[in-house]
Image (cartoon, rainbow, N blue to C red; front, side, top):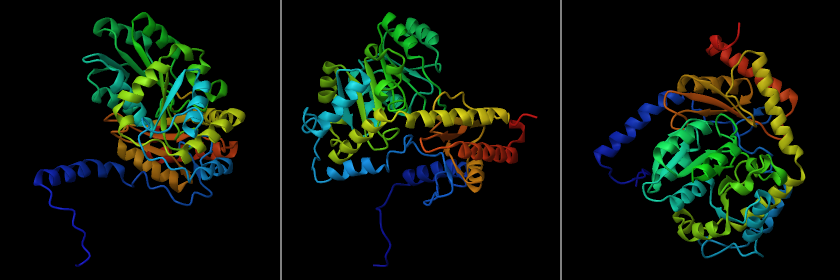
Length: 393
């Protein structure tokens, strides 16, 4: 053998499809926007979702290590979740924080959203989705027997008009939107859904652990937790781990546990991860100053941008974005920022709508004022080089 690895013979149509898809995307992401340095010492890191910086917290790592020898590789339907075991303790802790009856754990947030919407949507039922809702919510509508209906971003009145025309269904919104950082008025959506016989699903992926009493999320903070039938979340944001969950009534969680196909046909969350999540949630609840600092630093960054005449996404949380007209510009701006010592995230289609792109900055508990000012200066320099008209004269 000459060392060549053979992957089999593919039909010509696949080869053409693969080459075309790469040709369409590659010119727009040069320099490659996800090529973050391995060694980030000395850099301002605003490219990660580890908002409370718990992924490397020694207390969390110790909790994870303590459960490494606990084996569990079956579906969550057949293993995990008893009140006394790790899975049951985590479910109970989340349920208490989110003011709900029960919680189902999933392997990631995508599975939580897709499995939930697929399991609860009736045939031909409208699934109303905020135009900026997470892709997993849209995927859930696609995989269900319902039909997706787009609604304007953060516009409950528009939603009500759509319901009047299309009928009752499932309404899907984010609490804190993952690219723009905009915040939902959940009570307004609750009122519309209760008035129009609709079922509300709120994705709390970016708000769980960051706001609300006991770090329970935005619905708790806005005082309507008991009136939201379903909330989903992710452990890969504030909690600093891997996995997701669905929160709701005991009856609904029983149904989801037995009829949610992505949950039934996926292995349960590993016990070592569950142990880490338990410890991380406990820290988030006992040390609210971590979230407060991340949110405060994001607010300072927004002010620093505004003082330089730079328009941002209208963020109200730890996520701040700057929209750019072309993916190529976002990629070049990313590279310029990296050269200036600041790491951001690049969003190009399909991560955002076709014809748009964005630089996203996510703020975390370890940020300080000096780093914020350094980041704002770098943005000013990068945009001044590429798009001087974006800056106020």
